[in-house]
Image (cartoon, rainbow over all chains, first blue to last red; front, top):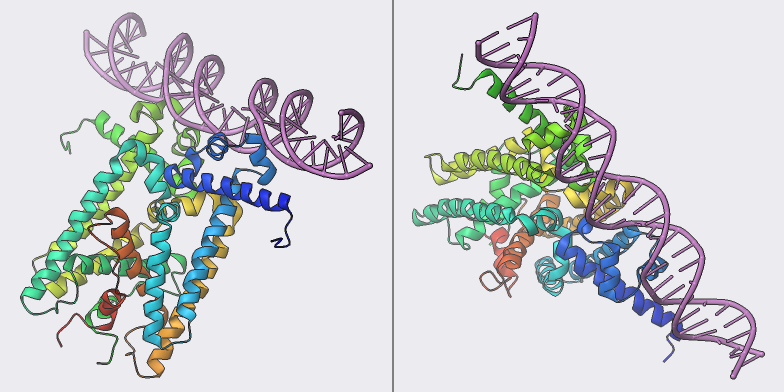
Amino acid sequence: MEKDLSRRERERLRQRQDMLDAALLLFSEKGYHNVSMQEIAEKAEFAIGTLYKFFQNKEDLYKTLHMELADKFHNALTKAIGEPEDEIQRLRNYVVAKGIVFQENAAVIRLYFAETRGASFNIKSGMDKALRERYKRFLLKGAHVFESGMKKGIFQRLADPYLLALALDNLCNAFLTLWLEEPEKHPYPEDPDEILNILFHGLLKS
Amino acid sequence: MEKDLSRRERERLRQRQDMLDAALLLFSEKGYHNVSMQEIAEKAEFAIGTLYKFFQNKEDLYKTLHMELADKFHNALTKAIGEPEDEIQRLRNYVVAKGIVFQENAAVIRLYFAETRGASFNIKSGMDKALRERYKRFLLKGAHVFESGMKKGIFQRLADPYLLALALDNLCNAFLTLWLEEPEKHPYPEDPDEILNILFHGLLKS
DNA sequence: ACAAAAAATGAATGACCATTCATAAAATGA
DNA sequence: TCATTTTATGAATGGTCATTCATTTTTTGT
């Protein structure tokens, strides 16, 4: 019954968690700068001063939140890919685990991915939607390329063409992310086939 | 000589562009909320009131900037993938074009990708670097799986294992992004092989 | 060169919000 | 029950900005 924490300590932890939960909800919805400490306090049903008993300041609150979420994700995925099974199965575990943590934390994800471009403006401006629509239309163009290649028999029907277009775009982004961080170590390939071959040639020796 | 714009109009356009340039530099470096109109005005060497002659308010300035950049990118990529060549070549064009716009606009990119997670906190806190390091280590784990599969002869040496790990992660992200936006239309696949097959089986009929 | 029009300026205004701290409420234990 | 300690409260403070607009400077046309 006692879990080595006193009633009071357990109570404090619950309070703290309530605050973090409220903050997460608000941050992920509106973005860091568009949420006031007042708001967080209200949503968590505490006075604002109480918030400051638990967190030094707003940034501390955010960092804590960010860290806890990152840990949660990281642990789930590390565990999944670390299971002592064969390579293919470990990749499967990873793919599945990633799906699960995402789906279980859909609200959260926006804090990671969509925060700025997402919340701070677009909530008001709605402009972001227009851009997303355009990106969608652009992907459709890519999908047509795959589709048409399939019709001609150049490509196999490996997956939905739209997905393939998205996959290729994200593949490029992956390379570019590496390049952004360490340009000399990970130059973006001169030869586009270095990227395309990942899609073109199967990894499995069949 | 006259390009159908008066001296004055051309002058105004240049001014406007100077303002946008200054804003881009600052936004991409520090994030929207951490840049004041005062700062932008100073960097562009105008009085703050002049800024408001050109842009209704801060959000308008940002949206304009965002829109112009998005247009530039979009046009370059659309053109690349639209050239009347065979499918494979069009994909190549796209991959190359994407590399070029990125590299030509490295400063800009952070406005798109890294803004919040990037600037607003991490500039001060440095926490973000720790997270990125951990992500790197995590990818290395994934890379080991690919590496080990290659050693066993299960996988072909298609690409650098680290890149493959990154590619797989981004592939999952692609699926999850779709799912986030339209969960019913694009469910995350039950079967992980739906994702993995894109890597496992080549698109090309060889 | 001069007056009228256009453009540029930046000090002043008002809102917003993080943070503090004097006070009130609750918990403790004798 | 009551005094003491611990915790919670939210009004008050101070700082930061976005935005405005009365004034100054520059341009234009005569």
